[in-house]
Image (cartoon, rainbow, N blue to C red; front, side):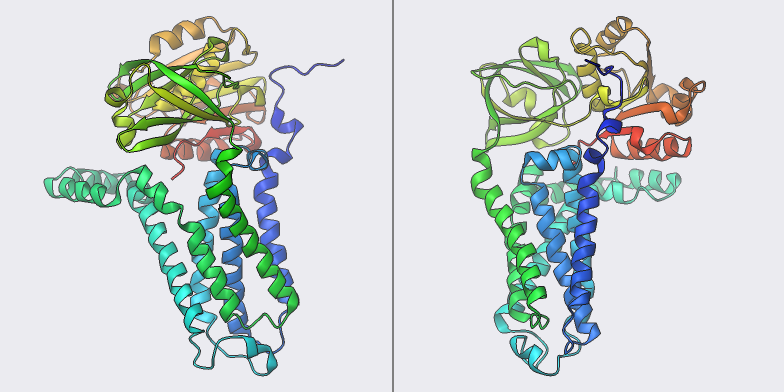
Length: 476
């Protein structure tokens, strides 16, 4: 029997795993549009038809977006991890929302002449009373949820501005008025859990828009268009009902107990848990859903498992980024019960080539820490340059240095941005100057602006897209 070396790129052995999901969505949207164009009813003018097509495509994309967060194993396979599926959920939701603009502008334009329009809205051009009300609920509800999601990301939305302008914006944010405004904003918007609770209304808003289409569309004189619309909208609602009522009964959940809560650095805590019953089996670099009970009930957060499978316990290194994670040291104590869901993720060094770059920023070090801690059982066979950049002394620096010393062909580069400036892509490229960039795999995990900048520069330097692997930890 022929065995595969651990460093042979899995992405080359199974290429559809990285592309089948996104490609499938684009093909589905394209085929749906072609079907509507081919079977366009003759009595419906082009302006009104295209507006209604935009609305139907919006329903399709929203339905797929709901499917992507339904915690189905196939979704993780087709989209190369649920973190990437969550990113596509956001992209499809935004695209669907934007499609409502031409829908609003054109769908109520020219009225059909002849029998095709008999099942459509009345001749005043404003749709049926119930359909019009549902349209308003769906459109403005989705717009409000989108605004709610975007507002906490204002800093990222301004990232296209010149650096000197961004520095002025940051200085403005330190004024007393700005701090008071931000505090009011946090009070109104709430944290992740409030956003997540409101985000669950998306399916109801989709249902409102879907029923509006059934009541007011003038294109359904064509059975093909009527049934295609029913199929995509109905499928989305089925997935929504499944997620809200039945998904919890099919999730792989494991009972655990907190054993230690250890401060590692300012704002960084390591929580260790032992199984109570069936343990979680994971691959180094994967993450899990950690459910902990706090003052406001059980809360769920995705955290990368920073320990090794051979430990017999789970370790999570948690950065204080939100309200719940800020309170970890005070609210979590040994003996507390916990529930673990998963594991999830496909961020694995075994998917890389024989020459690798690892680039970690801040708390993005956790999957790499898991890889190093697992070296005795999950051997690191590639030649690796590991860049770990932090703002200040690096957490786990001594342990990482000791672990790296025991890994042949691994060079560790610790970088403190407070003394040496931001880590540049040139430093990483210098480490592989003697290698063919097309044969180098790069694994990145860290703040999104840093990772995005590195990916852009690495692509320009000749790193193949298929060899760029990233882990997303900001799904909102």
